[in-house]
Length: 571
Image 1 (spheres, rainbow, N blue to C red):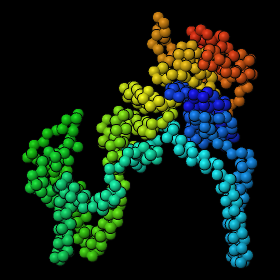
Image 2: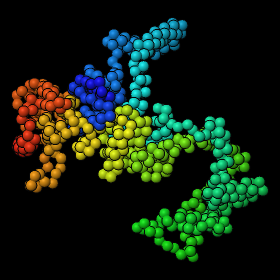
Image 3: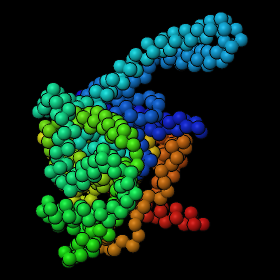
Image 4: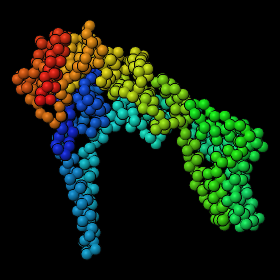
């Protein structure tokens, strides 16, 4: 239709496996209107996620036929047969030429001139063949660039696996900002490149002063230790002192304790926080310890630190002074560029605030701290909200949400659904919502499409599909919703659809749902059902739509059929 933002027609795709091609989508027809929230439901293995991935060009399957159009523009690309034939021939010639060149290179040892000539000739043939194939693929490269622009700018997708969708090597702020930078959504930076470079050059000095003011005790300990070692070397006492260096096991903690008292540091901060609060908390309450035993406990708890420090001091006293200074200089020269480069590449303050605001929109608590974290530091629900924030940040015209509330608790789920609804109401964003939760469908969607075994079996408005379903599979899904009572009687068993989704490789001449349908007959087995318009805008693929008018009768038929199915399975 002209007012559809997404239109999928007769889509058929397959995956190549070692056992042969497996057809994942058999014939999918689906449309999403402008500003519409379309719900896509069905059991696992019905092809919902494959449909969404094919739409944005990220599926690894081969498209056999069909069309996927975004605002009238085709998103699928298939080279003409003659172009594909030329590409295949070019690839074969290139591979054979390279293999022959490698094998022929042995001939150089026997006849150098002839060998070099043959290798050069084969390399030239392979290079020309590859160049021919490269130009033949120009249409594919152009389409790939077009899809890269479409993804994010026009169509965004919330992926189903938040645990693996984020890059574990980068912080949250970097990953969110990269998406926005790629699609030109970042605000103007506050700091110019020249000023950023100047700040990066002064980073080592700034870090030293910050360390002295924020972590005074450890910083002074390191500086005094280095000073002590250098003085010992320069005065010639290093050889004598290294014999007694292991005696510093007790002296170093005691020295740190005395130094902390001389600096008037807060013992609760510098001392209890390290020695007691982390190691003596029971039930969330810290165990109080008398200040009288602080030094003794401090010495005992610092024993491993004292051993390591004594070993380091022993090695520094044992090494020649020139070697020691050489190591310090080399380590410093190697570390400084990395420190300065890291500072130069850090996120601009304006961009960081922008990322924080985006995380606030998806109800992430304390976003200022979260932006500096890595994905492994977040729970599954937090990672899911980060993924949602990344996809919504670019304000796409079409949002594909594949199980967006899977890892979220009920409270956060309601907030995310409200956020998605606001995105539609305020920005006019159309949403294709893939979910198993019919409660979410009823809460959010305007229309519903039901998929089964790689095909669409029913589609219509929310009221039509949920209130007046006509396809037995749709009725079975609604019947399987857990309820404590049905009518006035308590429910003893949970209704189910007997059987399971068939293997994608299994061939069916007729309806793919017939092994699980209580109304199946010879016609269902031999003839595929057409998509029949039950009422305006309401379509169902079934030979028995005249028998599905009363939903309760169909549900009773499912109960009887399930009992017979279970009995036959036991027998």
